[in-house]
Structure formats: structure tokens, C-alpha cells
Amino acid sequence: MLLPRFSAKFAETRRRSGAFMTGFGRSVTSYAMPLAALAMAVAVRASGLSVDAGSPGVRILIGALSSAIMFITIFVVLEHAEAVARRVGEPYGTLVLTFAVTAIEVSIIVSMMLHGENNPTLARESVFSTVMITSTGVVGACLVFGGWRHRKQAIVRQGTSAYLAVLIALTVMTLILPTYTQTTDPGTFSAAQLGFVSVLSVLLYAAFVFAQTVRHRDDFIEGQAHEVSITTAPREGIYASTLLLFIGLIGIVMLAEQVAASVEDTLVAYQVAQSDSIVGAMIAGLVLMPEAISAVRASLNNELQRGLNVAMGSACATIGLTIPAVAAASLLTGRGLTLGLPAADAVLMVLALFVCNVSFSTERTTFLTGMVHVVVFFTYVFLIFVP
Image (cartoon, rainbow, N blue to C red; front, side):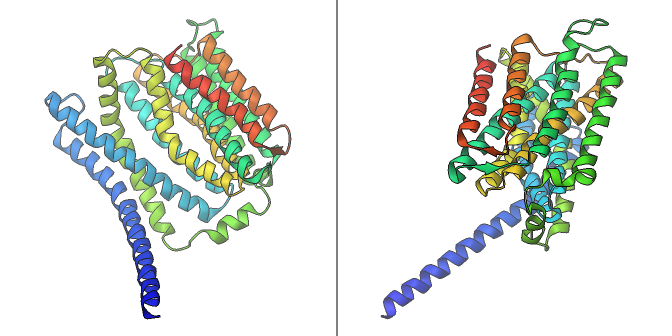
């Protein structure tokens, strides 16, 4: 009698201690990594070891260390962003995640644009990759996994239609229209055109955020998602998460220059073909990975609308905020910017947006709907390496 009872207590003690150590390790990482990223960035800048200074071995070591720290910090920062998002509820929580992701992506793109020789198509490839990954890969995964577990899932058609309307307008204006303008070479805008489209993009995204958070807030909330998010989110530690979120973002932005230089120098050294497409997909995939996990997790919990808000919100914010930021950097530095997509990429993006429009035309989705998105996503990935 005593032995089974002792064994049960011992097993329970091990389970609790294991859970405590897991939580403790996660807590230490979540606090340490944002501070480590900021400290690393400050130390590199204070020591004068810029991307073009020092021996090649030192640059490689610093680049590798910066990449590792930034990679882990991205996940930690987005974990803090999700904690804040859960506390403030929908749809404000989605905006927290979206702005965190966009800030990281902008910092990496601008850093790579300004490093070395002019790279006019990098911003285009990164934005195109973000749209394709979110509208086909992330949305497809949400619909497939959520549909497989729950058979059918409900969405708020008004909200998804608003996302699609903004996304279609922004993508056509910024990624397709430049190919057909006549003032400059195909694929490019003049300075006046670039400034005009950038202002329109910011205004349209601002109008969308106003509609999402104030005017038509209920169109982006499924059922009682707002109340559930607030009541289930832990109150303690929310201020620490907010502070660490901003510290981590500052550290990532400062480290982006080192990481961008290392990646670009490596691709040039190995003479990799389609380097812009690969780098753009890498940036988008790296930044969107934690957010994609959050979206799929929400879909598995039968919160499909929240998952779609996260996925489609990233695509809208990427164009609405990243393009103006990159355009400003281009105008200030005088570096050229090519935004117009090649014909094959334009067709693929139009297909992705058309599939989204069909998928969200009803108020319920199934795993078959998601499979269509996944097929388009794998086509996009294949054509990166076999154009």
C-alpha cells in the first residue's frame, strides 16, 4: 500500500518540479533575451565594430552571434506581444502583434537596403513574400488544421471582406501599378508618384485601423472573443511584458544592420542566383513564423477569426506601413526602388487574392478550402528556386 502511494506522490512531485523548471526557464529567457539583444547591439556600436570594420573573422563572428540573438529575441518579443494582445483583447490585440511584426520587418529591410551596393528589388520581394506567405501559407494552415479538428468553422464575413478590400487595393497600387506607369522605367515610380502612393497607403491603412478598432469593431470579432480574451489573459506581468516588448524591438532594430550585412555578404560570396527572392522570403518567413504559430493555435482553439485577423492584418500592415517606410528611405538616400512585380509573380499574387475572395465569400470554411491555399503556397515556394 505504501509503495504505490509513495510512487504516486513522487511522480506528482516530479511533474510539478518539471513544470516549475520549464516555466522558470521560459521566464528567464523571456526576460533575458530582450536585454541581451539590446546589450549586444549597444556593445557592438560602442566598440566601433561596424559591419565594414574589423577583420573578416571578427565580422563573421559578430554577424553569427547577432543573428542567433536576434532570431531568439524575435520569438520572445512576439511572445510578449501576444501576452499584451491577450490582455487588451480583440481587435486591439491583433494590432499589437501586427505593429511588432511590421517594426521588425521594416528594420531588417531598410538595413539591408542601405548596406553595400543598392538593392532596389529587396523591399518588393519581401513585401510580396509576406503577402504570399500570409494569404496562402498561414491562412491555408489555419483552415486545414482548424477545419480538420472542428469540421466547419465560422468567420465574420464583413471583417474578412474588409481585410481583402484593403489588401487588394494596396497590392495593386504598390506592386502591380508601377509596371504600367509611363513616367519612369517599368517597375518603378517617380519621386512624386512614390510619395503620392505612400501617403495613400498610410491613409488607407489608418482608415482601416479606425474601422477595425472604433467604427466597425464588431465586424472583426467572432462571438464573445473580446470578453474571453480579457478574462483569460493574466493580469500580472502585463507591464513587464510591455516594457520587454519595446526593449526587444529596439534591440532587434539595432542588430538588424549586423544581420543584414552578414546575410548579404554570404549570398554575394557564394554567387547565389535569385538572391533577392530568397532573402525576401527568408525575411518574411523569419518574422512571420511566431505570428503564424499564433494564428494556427487560435484556429485549433476554434478561434478562426482571430487567426485570420493575425494573418491578414500582417499582410495589410506590411504594405500599408512597410512600403511608405522603405519609400522614405529611398527618397532620403537617393537609392533606387523597384516595386513592380514580374509577370509570373503578379499572376501568382492575383491568384492568391482571388482564392482568398472565394474562400471567404461564405461564413463557414472547411479543410478543403485550406488545401486550395496550401497548393498555391507550395507553388510560390517552388517557383522561388525554379523560376
